[in-house]
Length: 109
Image 1 (cartoon, one colour):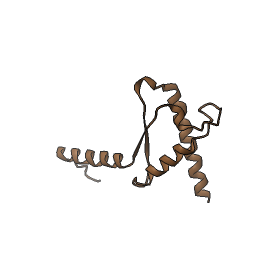
Image 2 (cartoon, helix red, strand yellow):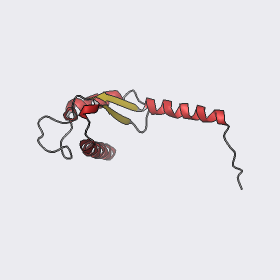
Image 3 (cartoon, helix red, strand yellow):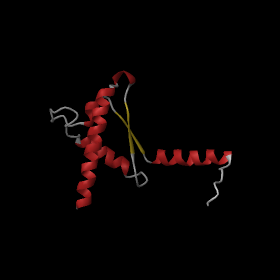
Image 4 (spheres, helix red, strand yellow):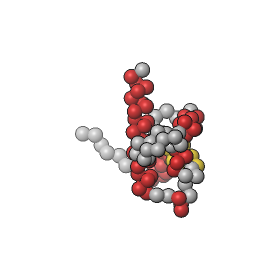
């Protein structure tokens, strides 16, 4: 039976700071004037189906090059008065769908 050892209190801060550093290294923050900045201007469909903007995709690709490998966290900076939780949930689902499909397509090649 393996003995369970407690981590000294001062080490909690070390672990926490290392974890926070890794998260910062994998974080991409982009400023948005409007949610429409994420999507193609030529696609009239709702956010749940709309194509992503080439500018948005190029910027996220450029920003992700400098990040550590693994999971990347994408954060949007939006003025508080512009936020809409319902739209954000739709956008979050659409982005996950897009990047999941892109990843699967790249793995097949």
